[in-house]
Structure formats: structure tokens, C-alpha cells
Length: 458
Image 1 (cartoon, rainbow, N blue to C red):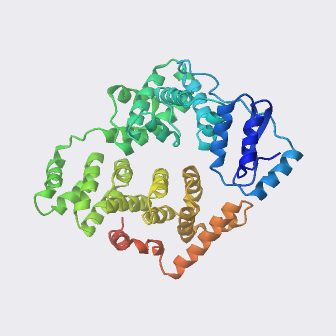
Image 2 (spheres, rainbow, N blue to C red):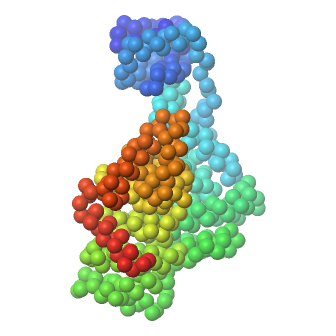
Image 3 (cartoon, rainbow, N blue to C red):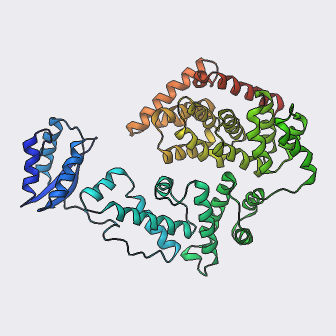
């Protein structure tokens, strides 16, 4: 039958039954689907009480439980699935190859959702410290073989005290790539896969400012292409002595009026590190001067400027500097920055996220699929996605949105219809900056950036 937890006698009955009989326990999820949880065999008093306590936090209507009863009687649930990686306490063994570490990591990611962790603890009787040990070993093995951590595992690594920042994780991962590269069989990886891992890691290192060890630099010639090597070169210090007076002008910003001519030249010629310092210092300049410097950076259209802009987006908290970096990357149509902008869109508070929606939309119809995949990875809310799609519609993606509005997925239809309506509102308002109007001064700043960009023809 079905237990109604709002009825104390029925709740006690489940506990009593579990002392002597096998009890099939199922739950109804928020979408009305029936999900088998466990087969309880008494005596398991503590387990049953934990399950009841967990379920008591949910509020299901009696009508839903009646529907569940009919479904249970029509199709009894199957036995619980014990196919999970936490069967016994971890024996301390580490992965012997990169491929073995990758398989273990994939298994761990599947158990990240909170409801699956609750099932492990409440129904399968796996102690939390055993679960944490498996995650700790799995994450360390992945990093020590140079594998990327899926983004959902980053907060887990922080909670377990494995790394205080993404930069620290990446430093350890690059050391792991060195280890894998030294193995005769590359840890079971194909040469092309290893090359792709190096490329992705070095590009991220350029964004986060992670310095390379001498061993990593020595391995670059074997495992990366020319463009990726440029990212590594950008992480090194630039010894060009002709930049010394320009750098002095940057350091002297707090001592007197800015020497804008020297700062402009530094923006046009400086190294990645110079551009990072210049971008951060632009928060102390007037909006017009700050805009001018960023437009000179993006006009370079080289790896150093792209890496610096992505770094500023990832590392700087000043809202105007982040706005300049985001607007510059969208003006460059820097495809490699789509994931960075999507992360900002997902993490920013209202109304700041609308700036990143605007910037993603400016990539235009050619980047529609790449942006769609990036938004799916972030699992952003529907309103934010709709604003991105609305801006994309204003830049040529109306046909793609109409196609999504005719799809069979209710969520896709809702988002597409909302985006089409928003695009019409923006067009009627004579400009796509309408969603930024609540940001006040930032809206004016965005308009200033666009006007300066047109004047300078960058």
C-alpha cells in the first residue's frame, strides 16, 4: 500500500512492519513519477527512522499518494540497484593509469546530486565518511594524472580541503599532466587525447594566471601546437626594456594625473601581465579613459589580449572592469570566452547578469549552438537563458528560436517563446540595451563603450 506520512499511525506502522517483514519503500518525486528507494528488511530500526525523518520534510498531497498506490499495485517496483561504487570502505588503492582514474571519476559524478547522496546514506547504509573518502581519492587521482575535473566537482574539492581555488586545482593538474607525459604509454591515453588535455589546461592557465614549472615548459614542444605555446609564452615575464617607462606610468597612477598616452601605448604593446595590471588599474580612471584602454586592447586581436581579457573577467570583482572585459570579448567574438561569459551569467546577481546576457547575444547566430551548449552545462535558469536568446535573435538567430518554439520539449518551448517576446520588446525600444536599464550608470557606460568602439573602428 501507500504510507501517508501526515497520519502518525501510518508512519508508525511502517516502522513496526520493518521489524519483522520485508518492506518495499517508494517515493513520489516532484514531477509525479514513482521512484523505488529500497527493500527494508528488519530489524533496521535506525535506518527506517532516518528514512521517515527524511521523507517527513517533503509535503505530498493525499491525492498524489492515492495515485501512487494505484501505480504500485499495477506495476510493483523492482529490487533496489546495488550498482554503486561505495560498496565497502576504501582500501587506499589509487588509480594505476589515467584511464582508470577517468572511469572512477565518471562513476563519482553520477552520485553528486543531493538526492542520490541521500539514498546512499539513508537507504544503502553508506557512512558519509566513506563517501567523502571515495571522492577525495577519485579527485586526487584525476588531478595527479592530469585529468580535468567536471565543474560540479570543484565545490566538492573545496569542501574536502583539496584546493582553495581553481588556480590551485589547475596547478596540481598540470603537474599531473607532466607525470602522464613521462609515462611510456601516456597513462593509457592516446597522444591526441593528451595533446588536447595539455591545450585545454594551458589555455585555462593563461586565464587564471597559473605559472608553469620548468618541467611543464620543457614538455610543451612535444605536446602542444604553436597557438597553445603562445598561451604559455604569455605566462612568462616580458623583458622588453622599451616598455619600462610605460610600466612606470602605470605604477604612478596613484601619484598624479594619469599619463594617458603612455598607458594607451602600453595597452597596444604590453605583455599579458601588463594588460592585466592595466585593466585592473582602469577602475581608477574616468569611464572614457578606461573604455579607451580596453578598446586598444581588443584592437590587438592577439592571444595576449584575449587571455588578459578572460583573466580580468574571471579574477576581477570591480563591476566596470568586468563590464569592459565582457564587452571587449563579445566585440572580438572570442569563441573561447563563451564558457567564461556563461559562468558569469550563471553566477552573477540581478541585475548584473543581464550584462553577460547582452554580451553573449552579440556573438550572433554563428555561435548559437556553442552558446546553447555552454548554457546547458551551467544549467542556468530559464529567464537568464531567455534574455541571451533574445539578444541572439536581434543578431540573426530568429529562425533558430522559432524552431525551438516548435520543439516537443516544454521547457525549450517556454524559453523560446519568452525570448521571442523579449526580442520584440527590445526592438520596439529601439535598441538591445533595454534589459540593462535598471543598472543605471552601467547602462550609460555600455553605451559609451559602444560609441567609442564605433568611433575608433576597432
